[in-house]
Length: 210
Image: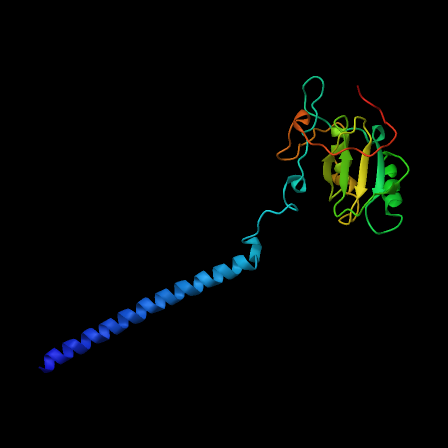
């Protein structure tokens, strides 16, 4: 009888140890799951972050691909002196457009008289038409925060709308030299595939193309 009691006690002890082990494992799994969930919830190390406009190519704005040379060679950055642009202030800071315009003139661009944009701009925009694509890529390479925006203008004037994200121009050592092949923005589309373009503001035509 004593032996039977001992066996029952041993089985109970075994079951208790097994249950304790199972509960410990389940508890550990739940803790790990909770920790992982918290890491995703608070985006620690970028976990759980949805790819936002800030990290998408061209900040989520569709852009045209660079225009190839007439001989079929890759598109190339344009000489600054061959680009006419206009700087518009989309920030709350007075005189910002003139300061940026002067800085671009020092880089041999041909700026028109700077002006104010019609509303506040969060991000600097390089606005251009189908005849100024490579010029727009060239201008954008001088900025660290610029987004290319194509409208329906027919000339080659480039509008630079300075936004709140603007800090300074790109270091000239990092700006591609004229004649170097342009690397198109990831996901860019052919110019003739760009549809539903916004209407360009009225301005004097610059180097109109037929």
